[in-house]
Length: 105
Image 1 (cartoon, rainbow, N blue to C red):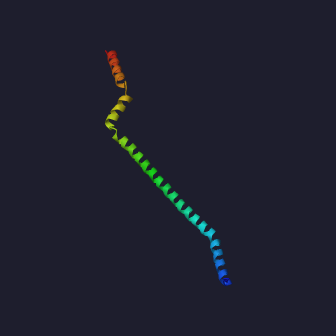
Image 2: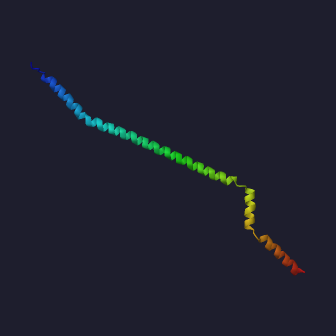
Image 3: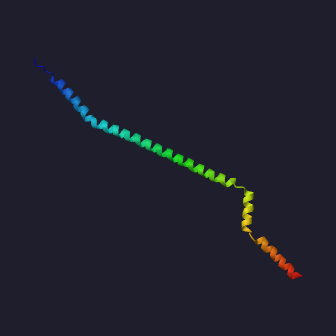
């Protein structure tokens, strides 16, 4: 017994198959574009996070430098600087004063 199918049914099935096959590239490309957009978003999020961490490290380094500057004992540093800057001047002045006194006599 031969099974006959109405030509309208076969035409409808054929058209739906063609529709599915025709839409496949569009769905595939939309899926690729969506994945690309998501990956790009994550890339920018990571770049911003890395930049924020670099800024935090720069602030910490600046803070450490300022703390080292302020931790130096200013009185001791000033005294040491004065000694280095005036090495021998007091001795020279004393010698000159002694010579002047000798010539005055």
